[in-house]
Image (cartoon, rainbow, N blue to C red; front, side, top):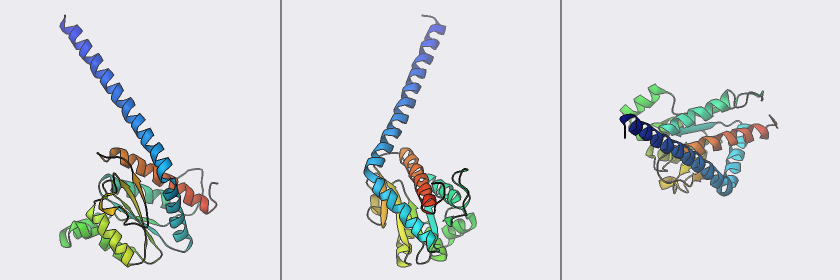
Length: 211
């Protein structure tokens, strides 16, 4: 067998493996979203109702999480405040990602410990009638747990996007959605952002925008 033949066979095997991985990953992600649709639709609807009610009464939404969940916090807050669908012309909706102020986060991490940063910001911005959405793929993020605890003491409604078995945050929030995925956070995060988009649209439509 020539070197060229061996190389071609190796590349073919690698290509087939990669294509299989792509198909398996996308199919798993789709199946996981179907499970969420069947198991969590009631909770997703309730979350949209809690946020819409807060907005209608002059409250705001605070969102926090770490890593990819921090990115999701910023993503969703921006779509509430700026725009979600280009076809919908509506006023800004008050949502704040507690993950975006680098001065506050680094000062908090340095002065009071990172686990206390989101709780401190919740104390600063949160008031009775507001809503805190905590995002944690494991359900064990201490910084998010402490923010939840702070929110409850201040009279905020609490929501949670979780994964796996919900971890320490299971049952902690007033309403939570737990994506039934064990292992790496990637597939859970895909579901979280899809759920967030659904909630934004439902909130918009509760105000009569884009129905």
